[in-house]
View 1: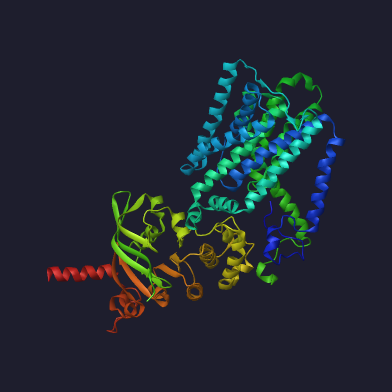
View 2 (view 1 turned 180 degrees about the horizontal axis):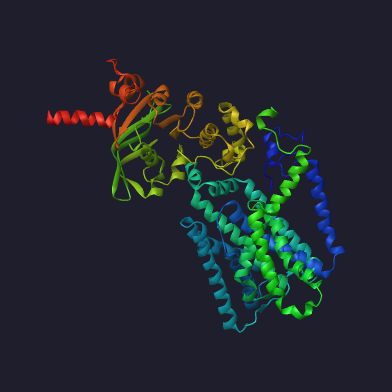
Length: 360
Length: 271
């Protein structure tokens, strides 16, 4: 998120402390304040549909951020993220159903499930790379879905598990506005965790592992250990997102976690822009809102009722086309477009940055 | 005389459980000493460095015999990161910097604590001021010489006690190499760390090392301090390209050290 983009003229860092500061310039401070105000004001302006969309984006953001940590920063591919969300959701559903566990038990339990799964499915990453690793994480997805399906049929919840809304400090969470703030907080917390992890030594180690494993190893970085660590952290974050998802929907069923969901998460980080937390957020918003956008566009066409059954097919197709277009024309994703815009205005009226040597 | 930091005793390295690459070599590096490992391609220099730094495992090779001791600890066949943490840091031959990361990020990668990072970074910019100017540039856009500087600087960020450099002068202009060697001596003098160099170019190696080993076909065939090797006739002839003054000049085809030994051996055997 905070890579070395050109700054407005006159902004030079003069000490290492400035390197560490999260917010560096007045513009950043002001825009952050505006963003926070907007986020807080939204539920009081928007209707229930828009609120639901926002909540979905927040849930997707947590998953996308954790996948970005794993894939965008540490370079480990995973196609098992839908499985991990399912694992969190089922942990929550089963615990809530079987022992009527409250929120403050199911949430850590989901995180623990994620940690265990991350540990198990991180192990192949020590030996496998690229596509091979992707296939091994795919196994995770199918195992979790299989186990979830078994539970559903054995216990007679063939359509899914119903969950009561959680109560936080004696307050039942049913209101859409309350959910909005809870999920906003959860997404913001995930973002802060990711930012700080990336600024820590483990973040530096992950990027080193991604960039070149042998060099990382030569510089004394425990490559195997850090790979496992990123799997564990990413999995537990995703599992927690699954837990929140289960409560938000009030319903857990394996149908919600098909392979397409995994693909969607991968799409989020690709469309958003690899190696950028901002990209994860933008991608999550884009991929979540995209089907609704297509639907509302289609609704504008005349005589659309006749084709109501085909809308999902149009949706899938459009999604595929957008993916391809991004891969071909904008490999850096939405964040790449954003950076280019920034660069354009920062460098204006010049087109390129001059040679660095000339500055001093 | 300072104490022995690294010692390799009669080490043997076997690739894929079948091919012996290095046989019974022994060498030692003392505290604050610059030692060079010379030899032609395929002599086993890089294998020796890999054996010391623990990178043999990647190529399905291992040290099958002998011992490698660093500061009193046996380090043969240990994982590379563990050896690096002990203080033996390798600057690899190729692929030595993180291409997608900026210079500052490259330098920060191996450091566990932010507080150390600042101090170490300042220290390193004293040796390589050029890197301070390039702080925000990504590794992939650096020139060859800058990359070598960055690789050495990253290695220094690990606070090594022994720095090992594979092919210091590979692909670099003589001027750049001269500059690098000057800085290496500065680093040795100020930080007191030992340096083990692998070099093809005997002239470069002998210009900065205190002691040198010549490898040939997986064995050490010659060793001695700088003065001895510099004046050694074989080294002069086959590595430094100097004639012995008998009318031959350096333009005549230079034979390899191995050829000459072969020649001498056959003369000994067949009279």
